[in-house]
Length: 253
Image (cartoon, rainbow, N blue to C red):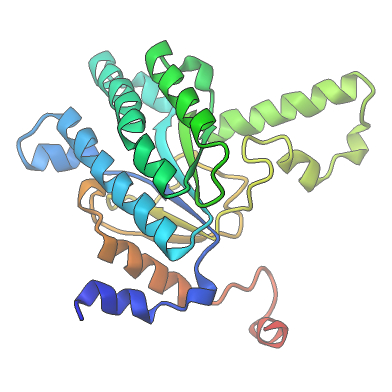
């Protein structure tokens, strides 16, 4: 039995996280280390997305949310942004047949109207083509930032209050959550960030209030199935208390 299969067998299948979120960091540094241009790193990172999606589906993860392109990424050099947009559209079109075979449903989170038309139409087509799928839901965060999302939710609720549909004192946490782009999606159980940085970078700030955070120095293009399983093993070794004591958690179990 190889090391990867041994690790997979060691997982408690009853405690696989329902929702895993990922910050895919390190493409540019990976390319620089190898003497390549940054776009080569982004292209290589697509292969990692493929593997992570496949393994998540195989393990029974229900939701996988990937930080593919942030609102702040629009400030990068225009040629890099153009390459990223092309790669996103190309990759989703290339992966669509396998996503359908694996019963994976595509969902888009973010200010999608800012995405260039060609990439946006390919993304919309993939979302429509996989809408019937009932397996893993792959949430792609594109032109996304948490502060943007929270601001948009506040505007929606403010407009409803101004129109007399709700009273400010009636606003609850659930009501606010229902106006986020992630409405109807359970909060992440686990957030993984590759690339060695240990910050959240304006990602799912509302949703990760009680998520377990896992940081790894491995650059995204090098993030292997074994690295992913290591993160899941670490997650399963943690006690999630949600404000309770250890004794209360054990009694509930």
